[in-house]
Image 1: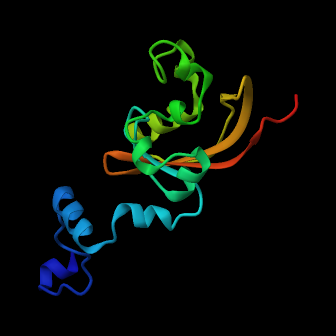
Image 2: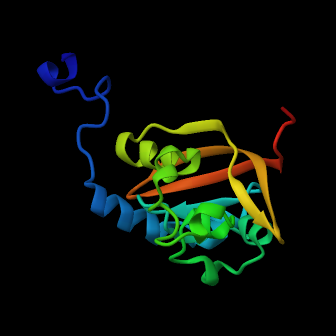
Amino acid sequence: MRGEETGDDSERPISHGICDRCLTAQLLELSEPLPAFLDRLRAPVLVVDDDVGVLTANASACLLLGRSRESMRGYRGGDLIECVHARKPGGCGLQACCASCTIRRSVTETHETGAPVVGRPAFPDVQQGQQTVTVTMRISTEKAGDCVLLRIDEIGPAPET
């Protein structure tokens, strides 16, 4: 209040802001292209919408999934990791078991609340050749505008039970 009363702005934080639309436009103008930024990240990262539909991916995710950035666009995460449930009629996200999918739940949670998820264990059943295999991974998410950055770490076989 002191700054307002005396006209001295030295103790007041920024007194004005910028709307989200203008901020986005400004950042896009000043920053590097999104694919270049994503490619600087070592871990596989997918940029997804609220339905886990892939908008783009970084080079590490392309390498992991054996696909080009362009060929992933529009597919859901389960399609790309070859989740066995995504192969059923209706596809990824439309099976009864999809409601309990850690990847889908993490993306939805972050999209709805804005809160990140860090290192959440996931154990999807994926198709590898003629076999169904449970794999283990750690999922992290972070909201970026209307999108969610989905990071996949520690991919490997499921732990022995």
